[in-house]
Image (tube, rainbow, N blue to C red; front, side, top):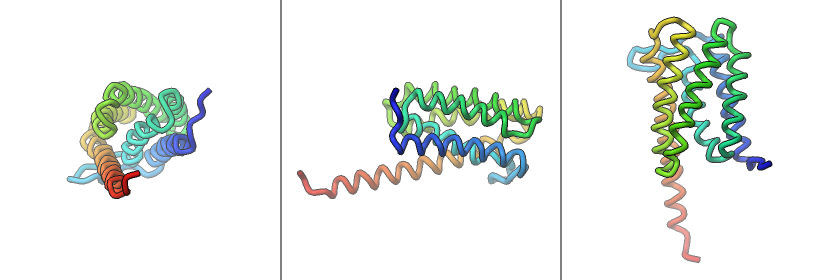
Length: 177
C-alpha cells in the first residue's frame, strides 16, 4: 500500500476540511454576496476551494487517495449538513467531484493549470445545478453560485501560476552545476 507523502496528506486533510467548512457555512450562515449584485449560499467559497484542492490533492497524493477522499467528503457532506440540505449536499458533492475528476484526469498531460480550469468549470456548474435544485427547488442562486466558485478557482490558479513562475525564475538564477 502506498502512503502519500506529508504534502499529500496535508492537501487531502485541507480538501476534506473545506467540505466540512462548506457544509457548516451553508447550515449556519445563509447567503453571502459574491459580487455584481449576486448572492449565494455561504458555502460557495469553500466549495470553490475544494474543487481546487481536489486537483492539487490528486497530484500530491495520487488517484486512489483522492477517490477515497471524495467518498469521505460525500459522507461528511451528508452528516454535517442540516437534515434538509444533507442529501442535496452529498449528492451534489459526489457528482460534481466525480465529474471534476473525470475531466481532470485526461487533461493532466496538458498542464496543471489547464486541467484545473477545465475540470473546475465542469465541477462548479454541476455542483451548483444539483445542489440548488435539490436543496432549494430553484436556481435563484445559480449565477451567484457559479460566480463565487469561479472566483476561488481563478484566485487559486493565479496564485499557482505566480508560484510556478517564481520557482522557475529561482531555478534559472542558480549557477550551472
